[in-house]
Image (cartoon, rainbow, N blue to C red; front, side, top):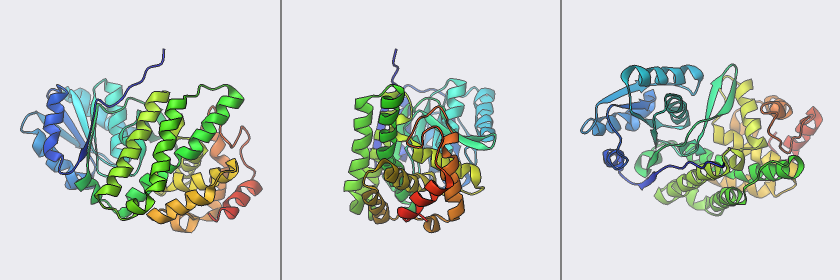
Length: 346
């Protein structure tokens, strides 16, 4: 049996905070609700979402920080103690991932209200959670609904939108890795999921100049691409259509650094290198990232070149069961350094 779960509603537009109550009513959600936000996202949209919900629901709230096990347990405890029936995550990837995991563990639905368009977790079933010294993807459930308010997302620093492009563009090498695993390991492969994933990547590449401007149209394009990536993962039943060796590289950086860069920035640079290893047009990928203002070098990423090389050599150990272009043995230091230098990353 192959189970596919998708968001029931995706609402994309301007001035959507007042629409939150209508979405909840259409989905027949009941009191009480838990609003989850971060210190910054509380001010950006969280307080306003909370106020709107109070007109129709009993509302509780909780402030969380990074996406780690401690914060997920904190939200889970709130849900259980207060008998919460559903949750809404108002924030970026970390807030959404924490809420996603806590709601999954407690068996309640959650609604995604992204304040940035920086990665595809806004609509996917997977949560990236730090714990035990590493950051890995945990299987959960997708949001019951996604409410993407362009006015809110547009206020985020431009680097977040560029990071969203980095996360979508990584689908190109992720699908290559997935095909490779299918050919070599006989792993399940979905043509539909792969096609949707690649289409999302190709569209952001085509529309890079529009996205660069950071106006409504560009924000819409990135949000739609991120949601499509989430749907592709739901069709596949795994993160395979949007997560390959470039994501293992990003997770390796998360392990090696106390303060890594944005997830999409790291996967974007990982995609340049993995595209080179796959023998595909890495220069076009790099050009797209440059166009939207995403980093394409270790210097722009703010990460020491030595760390980049080390991350490339250990990336294959992050999820050894996931076959990628890195193979079982990974890259030697010399091969990693060569790939990073040829692509201009270091």
